[in-house]
Image 1 (cartoon, one colour):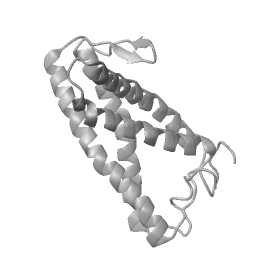
Image 2 (image 1 turned 180 degrees about the vertical axis):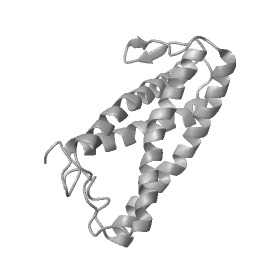
Image 3 (image 1 turned 90 degrees about the vertical axis):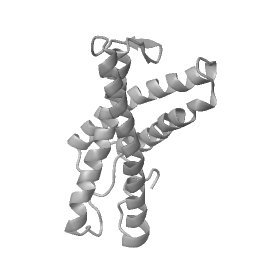
Image 4 (image 1 turned 90 degrees about the horizontal axis):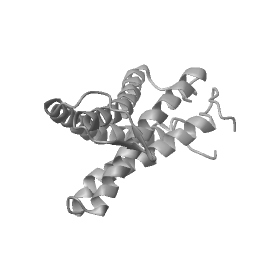
Length: 181
């Protein structure tokens, strides 16, 4: 299999990034949902926060590679072709998912910057994107949470659509992105 997409299926780069980022996104959500199991200031809670920050920023950087892969190679065709009424919602869903993978981590970076907190990234500390501003940080934190909540719905609908296409429409939408086929 080529690293590059072709007319009938995604290339190994797109497939690897898709599934790697799914695992990373699931872990980011997991760390936020379950950080409350640990008391504030504990090592466990700190590990959850650090994992959240590092993986969130990793998603932010990897999404650009994913977009580049989409630009340099064709999107594989869906066979049989989907009805026209499904094409627009499909494009909007992908746009929303890319927006989620860009905006949410970027807001996280801005939040840490606004609260004058370190921005950890695999042993490095990234520069702040803005001067400290607690009030703006609170607003950014609100939007970060709201977009993340919407992410549950987007991801769930995306997965449901893939299963619908596979089991009901019986097209190749899902199999184009599965590894090892």
